Amino acid sequence: PEILARDRLMKQMEVNPVLEKLKKTSGGFAAVLLTSIVLFNIINVDPGFDPRFVQSEARLRDLQNPNNEAVANQEGERLRKRGNKPAYCYSRYYKAIAGGDQDVCGQ
Image (cartoon, helix red, strand yellow):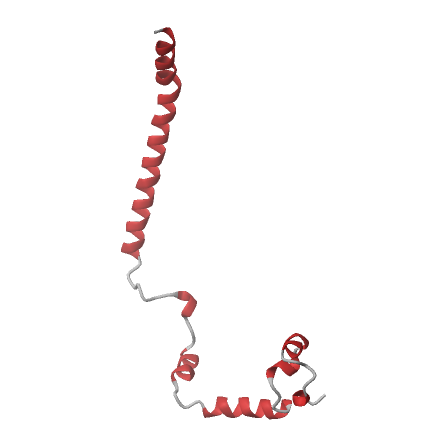
């Protein structure tokens, strides 16, 4: 009986106040989280807008153009200047993996 009374008193004086503080804090946190989510959804009127993907109009037109002959010609010219070698010829690591003793790289 004395130990049970002591335990009840400890719960009432030490544990319950901490539990009440935790309940208030978690309730406040949940309210702030819910409010911020609701306000964000109200304020964010354009769900399709993502600032990471904002590009200039000219760049967007270039990307949308199905006829990219100029880009293909530039890339072809660049490859001809490099000797039209495989990409691994310019990296020691990838050349070793591909079997660097081949004469493809013209060394």
